[in-house]
Amino acid sequence: STAVGQNKNRVVWVEGAYTSNAGYVAEGVAQATADTAAAVEKSRGMAKISAKIKVTNDMVEDYSYIASELRSEMLTYGMLFLDSEVYGGDGNDATQPNHIYGLKTQGTAFTAAKSGRVGVKGVVAPNLGDLADAMKLQARVIDAANPTKKAGVMRNRVYINPVNASILRTTKSTDGQYIIRNMADGTSWMAGMQVVETQAVGATEMLVLDTNAVKMYFKRNPEIKIGTEGTDFTQDLFTIVLFIRAQSVVKGDNKYGIIYCADTAAALTAITKTA
Image (cartoon, rainbow, N blue to C red; front, top):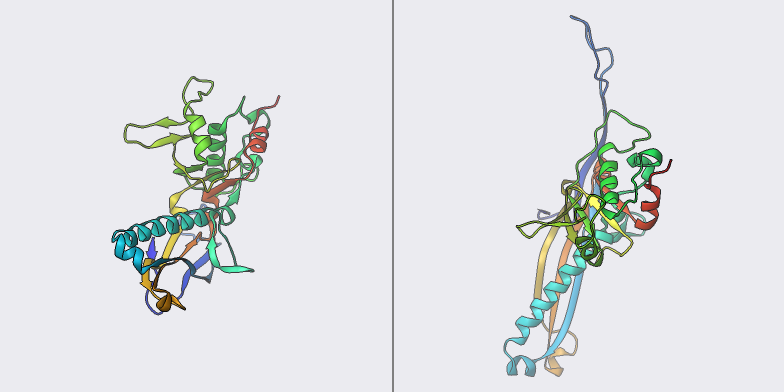
């Protein structure tokens, strides 16, 4: 993650397109066609997240630890909300420019044809591990049906629903290997990518990504304040408030490094081998 400096309330970055005309030249002859590039500056506002709870002064007096416990719970749930929004937030330039922009919408939708795993090149009796591999392949080739000189990226994480992950830990593929393998260091791996389990991912969803493709920005790290508001003073209350200011950005072609599948069942059908 990166901190946004003082006197700034937006994330600013440059996006561009580069066209290569690399090719052969004869000795003593200049390249006839130069490479071209175009760039544009873009920006995005910070999202502000908040939560609050009221406690009585009597409660704090009688149970001195309660304020600390409430702050801890508030921070935990606030960060869980941020985590879920980074995955599926509805931030967009048109209607929600100050919400978190989610990976689901900033990335690229999985298409079996773009992965190249269709028809006779499909998978016999595919499982979710095979689908993850096909999604990984799409990010690598970008579009197998329309190859270009531009190389894709290599993914290192696969996001999956915890229930699905539990099932895959006890399910073997046709080669007798467990689809998700647990390592000695406590990590889990599938299709050569580390597994991240989160309830933000729906039961029918899966997402693979290169962690370098997304960048998190924080204007204000999680901050908790305790004070009074409204009638708190006369009612002998305290208000505990949480604030977070953050935003996520996927720049330009980095969107090809994030592959999102909304319907795994349909995707499995699409990559099934046909005669």
